[in-house]
Image (cartoon, rainbow, N blue to C red; front, side, top):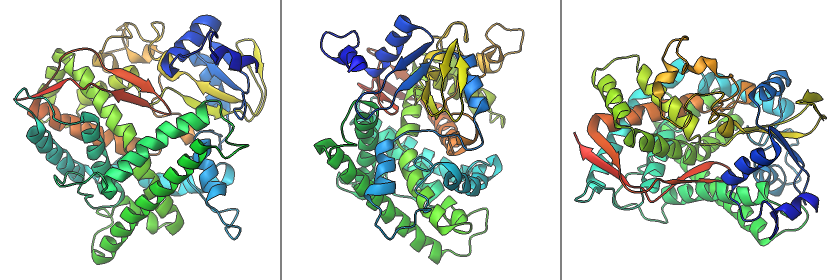
Length: 458
């Protein structure tokens, strides 16, 4: 009960949100903090030191263990499986480990991580971005604000984008007659609930591993609905593939390319892309737009680059990198140690969960001078400049993770955001009025309203 008492009424950590908790633990205990096991939660060590993070991440083996979304892993590996299912059947890159994960990851890497391969989807994503710009234009009121919920609009854009890459066809997310009970909106809601509910089950004290709680049953039902919805979209895509067999290899969607490699991997990967590519990318986009809106000089500099049709787009990428440093979509990364370490004078044994507080590290003055300022130039300036990003420790900022377990969708996400941000600044002067937004930290960071964006035609 020891650590749990800190979170109870009267405790030092009672009624504190996740973001505040991360900062407070550092302020009280310093760069290394151990939270002992509580109920079904294993003990975890929080690291706020970039050099220590680098030691562990660099020294893990070629099949590092990243424990996350335990409830989803339970659903896939136990809850939904029958007695006749193979024990070596893959369930996904999030839920699998060891040789099963390695075989899966090795098979899908060439399709999802080769920059040349992903760039083949540029025109399709540009079409989606153009349509979304027109949709935003039509949704404005007389004050150039977006009517309705801006975060839902970003979800529609991100789902349409990942759909056109993963499945090769448009999901019609921008249909003006789209109902709340449509498969598109139901999937978006499922994805959102997935991160919210898994945060409650996986990151907070809970007894669901011992007792089937109401929250556990609700979460399992939600995972099942999400699975059925992705099956619906994949079936439609497969029907389309059968009718368009004349496509060249370059024009094939990710689903079809993976089908040529392994049918089982193709289904799982397409399903996971429709889940992992929605809230993550949409919140990254919202955060980036906010930082551009409150830094008009940077926005104008980006607009000049975009309008010049400069193929390098170096400032565009610098803006996105800087946005992800300040407002990352995940607060950090995790590993379960496969060997012993001596870190900051403490012994960390094998089989211990380590959380690397990259969001906290990336806002430290010792790593990034003037850390609270949006300065894309730090990613472009030369080594003699004190702001030069290369002066920071390489493990102070890690928005996509590290090594072989880094984000498989990184290239796709970067291309989506680059394409859409370019279209936005090419068509609108984006401004912000009113109070600053709040960020809600669950399994991912949610950029919450009210959304005080103003989109003025150029």
